[in-house]
Image 1 (cartoon, rainbow, N blue to C red):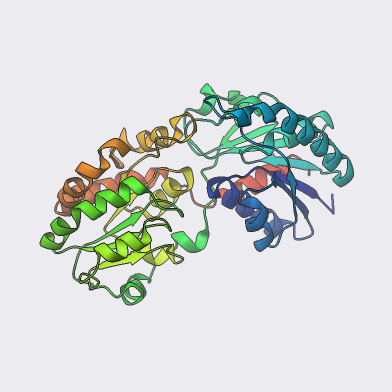
Image 2 (tube, helix red, strand yellow):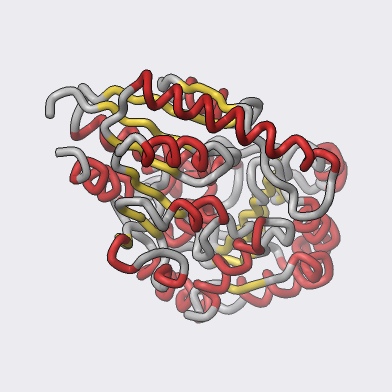
Length: 365
């Protein structure tokens, strides 16, 4: 087949969007003449991020169903019907050879429409606990690419392929970047460095835990690279006054490769892509799962590592009180840091996007 048409649907967060783009890029490397169409949810992050990556996207008027009662839920059936109709029209007009779902609101209506039109479908599940949309779609999908063992509890075993999560290659290639990282962040190469990341928007509880521990960090003589997110940034800048030589406050870090390169320890949320990146760069980590994540999937992502002694867990409710003590104890224990790094290695899947791309092409070639 010469000219392949691929629909990729889903989004809502970077954890869905960036893997989708990575899969498209991998397919394009193998089959440069492939035609792509992304389908997302109107008003969500994918509607800007996908065009920035060079791909066309159409939005569905879909919304999520809130797990607790809210008046917004009354709109859900109407939006779902409208989205289903639009999805059928998109499939009919674009005539895809294969449809890929990466999770998120839009993937449900689109993959159902594709399946009804006898279009082969592939799901990519990023988390160790499958999302509601993917659990429903998995019954009829032709192939399901997963990042963790044990996913047969959610999907038919014969459809599962263990691939890992696609990550941004430029972020996880750290060779030869340490000196550049020292210069970039303005730090000293002879001191231990901790990286704090709470996702692109930051994490209020983690930020407060860091703020509360600044005096202890200074006494211990460590360095901190602190991504605060937008809402906490001014407060963090104020807290860091007079300490800028070792406490580096950033609203957002665009060069995560350099941040990983300089880090001896990382404090992070436990989103699927963050965890996948940590496993590939093999950086010891304290994971602080977001408690409001759907079906508490971040805790399950974290526990997949913690049970194999590949990461430490600090619950969100405890992070304000415990973060400083936990972090300093780890940074003083070189043996424990090395053990965490070694135990992370088996969870790092290289070339996941290329493997998924090959599975997609098997469905159409």
